[in-house]
Image (cartoon, rainbow, N blue to C red):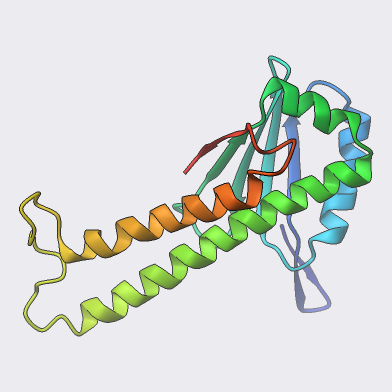
Length: 169
């Protein structure tokens, strides 16, 4: 959420609790803690609790075509809710850090490909080049997506709450 304060811009990640049905007072406290601890992030986390599972959608305010999705397993949701508000906040910050890292990797790759496209004198970057019809561009970008997924797996595989979560990459 962008707020203007004495002509200085402050960014903070925020939790949208519109679709939270259970533990609303607790989630409001967690939301305040999350916003206080994420002063340099510009994301909105939309939370939803249905069927005893927590769904988290992370939307970076600066990247219009990006949305992250994470659904905790029923067991992971139960474990999360057994934690203190502080630990829940830290878990959400961990997710924010994972998503921010993925967005930085993606942005770096896109910027590189845009530079390469500007100097593509013969137009070979985006034209089908390989037998499967892929272009050189797609052969470069596809492994970047794989790297983003591998980084996310590495960051969550030992986490008792996030290891069984379903992510949409």
